[in-house]
Image (cartoon, rainbow, N blue to C red; front, side, top):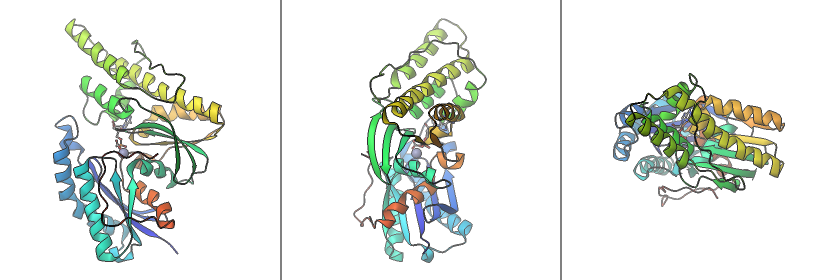
Length: 333
Ligand code: KG4
Ligand code: ZN
């Protein structure tokens, strides 16, 4: 029997719903983005985000049902992101999911947003285990081993900033619009690696650190500006990106060598970066490893990935009750 899950994602600045069949096939997907509003302020304003989710949520529901040509009665379960994210934003999605679950008397499934990013790779592919999972988003940078569905072992994580956060801060100091990641990537393509930026050196661990690199870029821009010197923004973006991505490559390479695992899944907003993709492709070729990176649409926040991640929970009957609440922190393991 086919399983249809309606999934809701509202953890940050996208209100999204998807209808996903058997955790694999996206029957309908609707995403209302708030980027233009937050761009005016240079970053996400939590108060505005939750208000805009409230405004958008019923429209997004209508849109996804229209796209899928399905009715709410056809759903087998309602899934929702409950963590990590902005509490006020998460609550909007959670309350919507609880209401639908109550009215249609179908199970409520709570999904971790980061696990959602990982399972985005299961939509058009079949993830195989054991595998390494590299999470690179606006709030997280983690390297994990997955031995099976929903079985996580953390190798390392960032000790300070997330890689996406450092892209966003570097974008801001270079005068690029929010969200910075894609704009830094675009500018970096026109530049050369000419600056000297510090590489985080923690070779004996799987941990990451991006605050030193971010601060170095900010200080360099301020110092040069004070001296009345021109910054070559494209070169600086390129140098920053080289160092930032190289750090990911080094840690994944260490994991390939030490674990012998021959599969890598890249997950989270920064997986949309084509330089990261190219570098991971080269690395995987060197270690004869299989690489999974989602299609661009499923790299950044969307509800289809939540529907994909909800499927193993549906099969295990891991359902939530109506006491489900939002959580801003969302450690997977
Ligand atoms: O996963 P995501 O959409 O939201 C979170 O869960 O955080 O990730 C957003 C992050 C932002 O920091 C954004 O700048 C970054 O992903 N990002 C990129 C690119 N596209 C999005 N960073 C680098 N290159 C990109 N092409
Ligand atoms: Zn995300």
